Amino acid sequence: AQSVAQPEDQVNVAEGNPLTVKCTYSVSGNPYLFWYVQYPNRGLQFLLKYITGDNLVKGSYGFEAEFNKSQTSFHLKKPSALVSDSALYFCAVRDVSGNTGKLIFGQGTTLQVKP
Amino acid sequence: DAGVIQSPRHEVTEMGQEVTLRCKPISGHDYLFWYRQTMMRGLELLIYFNNNVPIDDSGMPEDRFSAKMPNASFSTLKIQPSEPRDSAVYFCASSPAGNQPQHFGDGTRLSIL
Image 1 (cartoon, rainbow over the protein chains, first blue to last red):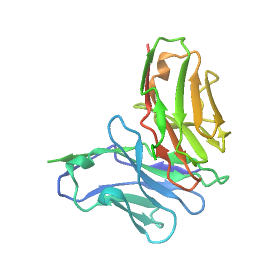
Image 2: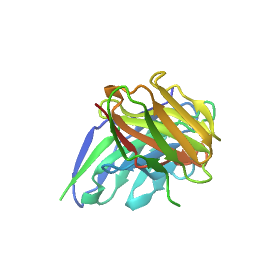
Image 3: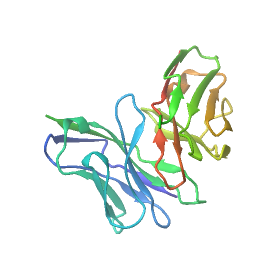
Image 4: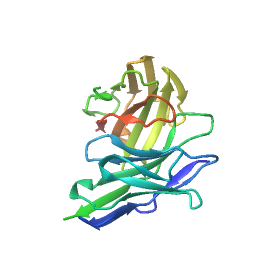
């Protein structure tokens, strides 16, 4: 069965420092992977996706993610964190069984960037 | 494009009442999803449609919940009768294809007293 794990409930980082939000996945076949961000009282917003191609994917707001097949990971990164990056981040993998549009989401990681 | 539009944004009602949540997906998107988000259970997929047809409703909690998509531009999620444990934020999302990102509305915050 497909699954996604975000091992950290919360990540704290100082403004200007690099940040990493971790995600590991388990799928049969090639994964379609996504990162979303959720700000308070808002819906999830798409950040970036990996379907095929380069292992380093660049997305919105300066975020990027590195796909690592051997470690089954898709960690979200940013070279220099901003206070405004503080939000809830979700990793998701597409359920490839039955060619559906269904996404399986991780439990979310709260990112706190301190000034 | 206006994005996914949900109404109402907030709903407070007493247990036993019928609740109807509404969603207008992005035009041209073939997939529509209903999610529920709570602190305890996180983000849960309730049901999704492809071309107005329900594909997977395995996440619907029980018979009190029902969802319809009468046309490509409108969907409803209904709870009847409502219970306090249904209190959550309900999100609607749409996507143009199965391997494309889902676009979320800003949700309906539902409180059942």
